[in-house]
Length: 68
Image 1 (spheres, rainbow, N blue to C red):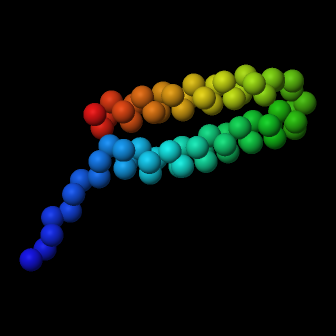
Image 2 (cartoon, one colour):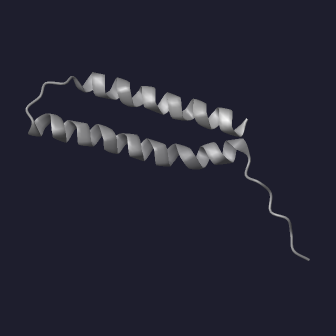
Image 3 (tube, rainbow, N blue to C red):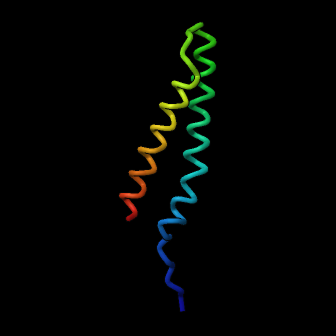
């Protein structure tokens, strides 16, 4: 007899999403640093990080609403 597969819980889905989102956001920060150097812009790194953290919070809130 085949066992029913349980739907992943909210915490399991969030645990799977966190490393992917964190890696993506780290890539965004790295790419912003490279572009900043290439174009000789003086965009504060703190500004880029603040934008990335803001995006992470939006994604986290959307995941929470979707699963809950």
